[in-house]
Length: 104
Image 1 (spheres, rainbow, N blue to C red):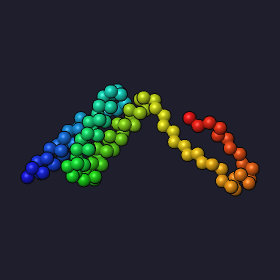
Image 2 (image 1 turned 60 degrees about the vertical axis):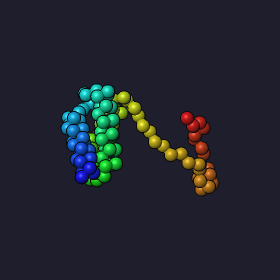
Image 3 (image 1 turned 30 degrees about the vertical axis):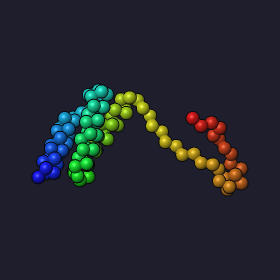
Image 4 (image 1 turned 45 degrees about the vertical axis):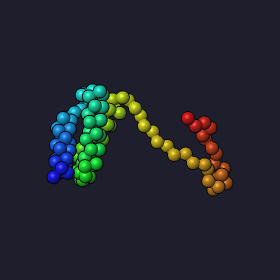
């Protein structure tokens, strides 16, 4: 019975967080979006801990991800991922050359 009440409370909090973030756009501002993202993070973590299934959390996770991306866009952050590897024996034999001289 206590478990059911806790699960119900977590589901209500999740629903309230989803309602509160409905219609948020970049025009809402960075601070508002960050606060919404943090609230969704906390509610999703609590829901997982209470045993709410991933399928039930998928909409909240999608919204959190969209809000996160909007925050990053507003900040102007650019994320670049690059993998650098040494030249292979074949590349060295084919007279390929290293073009990287400094890593950040």
